[in-house]
Length: 301
Length: 296
Image 1 (cartoon, each protein chain N blue to C red):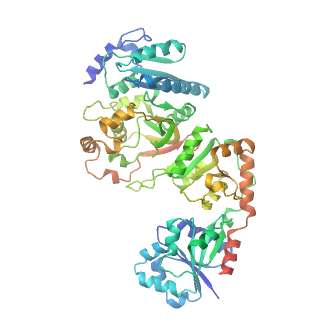
Image 2: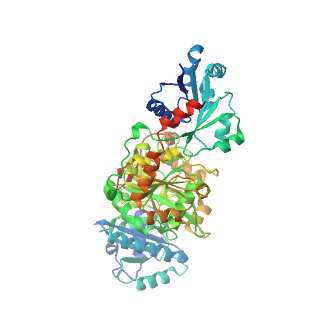
Image 3: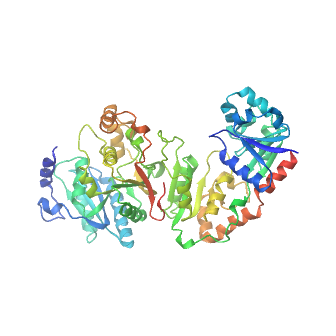
């Protein structure tokens, strides 16, 4: 009988993806062992013979393994090697992962939109799209957000301090959207002392519980929807909204995706917060759970 | 200049608004709570005054709508560009609004001007608005509530850089940390508690230290006063060729974080003698929003 395992770098890399996949496996009642690269090296090779091994952030795994040769040899012992990724195909990270020294049998791309065609242009490794759906811990998502009248923060703009997010902030002010929104744009340079210069995840959650809309712009030139930014605000009762002209022009069926601040403002005016929340919730709830999508992808490898 | 000399210099104040020329009439020892004095220092910024004053007067309206009160205090630091004439006209046009204008005969310089404003402000909380910058009027009540609720000495919000009408950057957008000993990232455009700042000696007027705002933040931290970041936009920081920013850039380097080496050395001598303070993980600033409370 095949077993499942995932190896990930100890402190960096796609740790949020690993956490999410672990929940997906748990929901699907599939046992999943999680290893650090050195932990994987410590296993007897025969322990991996019947294992489908998912690898997150492979290059960082190799670098932090302590013994690259031993690590690659262990990975090669697995029955199947699956690259788990959450990134645009065109990003250097995606291509770098595929170019790692691991011979992958499949790619699991976790997100809201399949990138199959774009993947096929850059790699021969079989591609499987895994919809980043609901997990059991998130259920039930309320049909109505709690205490909408207490949500006095009109919007929260959060994310990296990218040109896209800075442009979005500028547009919010140019279009005279309620100016009392919160702006939390994180520089890629962190405090030397490791002091958090902006609120951490708990602080952000507290803010989201008092806010109506969670906004972000494009993080790069590549059109891509960051599905991992969707569920946390939604669970806090905030409507996730991305403003990205390039992505919006692709006609995707994701609620809260706008081509401009003017389009966002029009939606707020015409639909309103409660209707926009319901639309986002219905999309997420009706798209199926992560466990279901993960099981289907595993059956296809 | 000594404090005594500063006080003497205020004897030279003339104003068309304040009738009594004596010092006692200018200083407000008993500050009023639940309001904000918006202080605009002016030195040859006539072209920009209408923008900053307009935003300040709108902010006073917003304060009043929020059940608070406010005033605009403009001190002209012996301008030569006709600012006084312009300000007198404004004063006549806006008769009946809480707008105070003071004209100095001799230039005091920005730090002393700020200290004078701290003494003269009617309200305990003072918004430091440079003459070429612009307040987001709607948001001032939120900052006023924040400083009152946190009892902070200084509350800062985000500032949006604007050049030729377009937003070009963001500043004052992180909470205070000991990284400030290596470079400044909190602008003077902030809300301060006049009493607390005066109690710790006010802004440092020292020709060796042209970054009195940077020094003040470090001083407040050293005095264990609260410095609070509210992640909401406080105003626009207009970048124009002859603006205060441009003067700062010309005189002190483009950003305080890359200030002249002797200035950095002096500040580090004062606040980071061990040479390692920027690595210190101690929490010195807090993040706050009235709807949520502390969010750090």
